[in-house]
Image 1 (tube, helix red, strand yellow):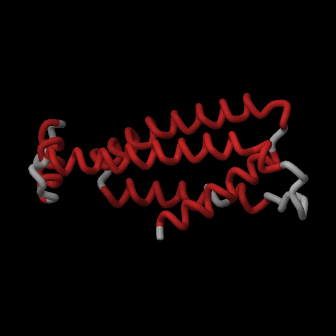
Image 2 (tube, rainbow, N blue to C red):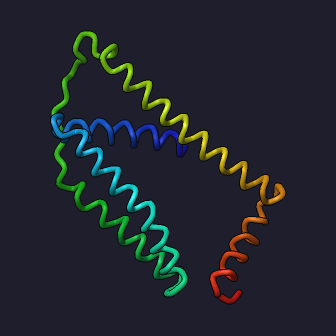
Image 3 (cartoon, rainbow, N blue to C red):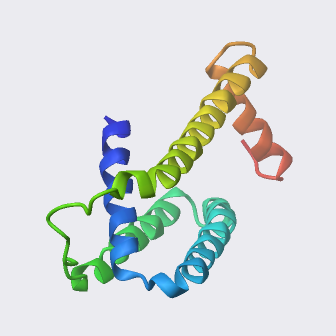
Length: 146
């Protein structure tokens, strides 16, 4: 189910990004987007862990929920971009390289995610309960009491 949701999400995301972005500034726009994604990928877990430690799970997950709901607000003003009803002749040949690059990126991302899960499972002596023990150990090393 998640794979199907991801397929619809990313297809629409890339189509919208291409439709509302400026072709002349596309590289700069993608660069800024990736910079923000990188910052959020580092700051988000750090802030979440800090909130969990200092204020507890209700505050941490409450703030995460508010941020998720606030992320909807900009989408309310997005107009549907005009879309050509048919593809121009030779469009697939022109975009084939981009499609192959996107496919390879998805393959690499999903393979590494699946690989990491298997590595962690093997590292925990093939026991999912070992993950809880690992989390408890990390909490204790951070100075919190069990």
